Amino acid sequence: MNKVTSNRILSLDLLKGLVMVIMALDHTRDYFHNAAFIFDPTDPLLTDVPLYFTRWITHYCAPAFSFLAGISAYLVGRRKSGRALSSFLLKRGLWLVIIEITVVNFSWYFDIHFGFVSLLVIWSLGISMIILAALIHLPSKMILLFSLIIIFGHNLLNYIPVEKSILWSMLHEWNSFVLSDHLELLIAYPIIPWVGVMSLGYYFGSFYNKNFEPLKRQQLFLRIGFLTVLLFVLVRFINQYGNPNHWKSYETIQQTLFSFFDPSKYPPSLSYLLMTLGPTLLFLAYAEKWKGKVVEFFSVFGRVPFFYYIIHIYVIHLFALFVAQIMGFGWQKMILKGWVTDSKELAGYGVDLWLVYLIWIGVILLLYPLCKKFGTYKVNHKEKWWLSYF
Image (cartoon, rainbow, N blue to C red; front, side):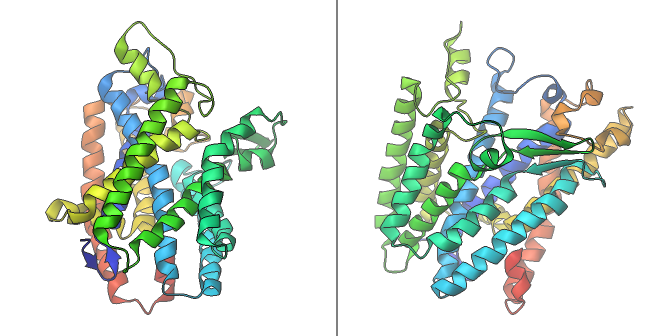
């Protein structure tokens, strides 16, 4: 049975924390790995197993966190009326969008002029919460139906001929737009299908009701998780619908497998969501009875994910300024006008992958006491309403 600490479910905190830690690995690679400025780490012709795995494992972060955000919304709603929960989700969603385009954007680029604005995962979570604020008033079966239609049917939108536009990109496509000589907009996380992932998580939140037996929940998650993984293999193997990035056969089995396990993430395809959500459910099933120091370590980050998310980018980027300076590039090169790996001025900068892992571990160890202290503060000051937004 799940251990509950301060009305929190340990297995959910564990997965959140693990996801946040793995996510930091990808961001550390972006800012420090020498090959990040040369080629895509999932390119079958150029990558190797360690580098491919370093990038591939982080594919699980955004789907898992969006799904868990839906579960958390349901659990919060058990203590509120429907109207109060809608109000909370609406305000929190707007708050996340504002934070994305201000505090988070500055952390990525350190550009006081905000010449490059990115709508990334925090924006996606915020918009999804705003929509979920309305969806929660539907019957649970309708929420499930909505989620499945979005997840399984969104790739039909690929066949609709639509001219490049900001609105369409916000809905479904990855794209960038030059708005003026001094402003560019990147939309990397469209609303569809991420809203479907969060609403599916909201539906699954009901399985954590106290009257739902833990063993029954575990068995249900195992069945659905394994079925989802099998569906991924089937959909990906057929190589038609749900696969905007078709896999290819290469000269070696390793290269072919690299291609097979690299479905489209921007925007997320059906095969990508099946590949990531299936193991997410399997993890939640198996983690029901896990406990110990390792579990507690990762759970510390899972209890304060938003706080951790904001701080970890600043820490990574600030250290990147220092590394750029000592490598002779100058710290000014890390004041970015676009995504870090697209910066031509940083060609030749960076360190080997094993050093990237050391930096990543250092970042995690540095953030651990901060997150633990803030988590304790939240538990001891529940009367402070504003803490629910962090």
